[in-house]
Length: 256
Image (cartoon, rainbow, N blue to C red):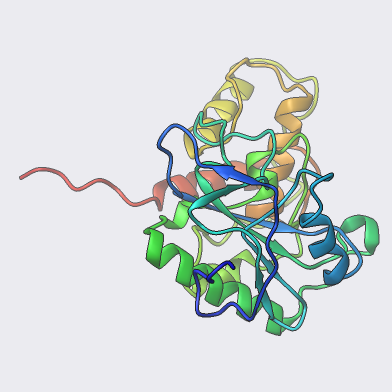
């Protein structure tokens, strides 16, 4: 029987889809997902099905009830093919929370207040115990931008950050003024954008070409940090918001 790692857990359903964390990695990231399935019962069923080969550590339903499915000491199969700061075994380096929501394909309803409050409390508990930095609280789309869009632009990252969960700054409002970069553009401005996105952690190379991979990363950035306009174009709003994020990162203490 799985003993809950968090006192906030109200239900335990063990998933067989787990293994040991690899290469000595421990949780330094917290990945937030939505389930993309119609009900929490169906979500838990899928996450516990050995044929599906997916799992997560926690599921939070619309009423705020929390189910644990994998011990935090173990590697849940939640992030898939993904990367952050060059680490490609995100499953070994993270804890995953699935938030019940049918997702974009299911109408993408708002996340209810009781659910968000439970997510907040669970995140605070996890990041405190594991000393996960604010910038280590990420969307599934951040670490897998070519494959995933969850938890999406409706997810209230600002509210979470104000409660002490995640790294976030007030985004610069989008406008129709200023130069934009988009699919097919090439050159040093594109390379500079890619370099700064990689400096924040995104898995992107500084090729100087705004290819489809770059567009996926830009969309992931917008969903998380500039959700007012998710169009895949890099504009002055995105650029300045990214600079604000990087500037607001904690600086290492200098040796006196």
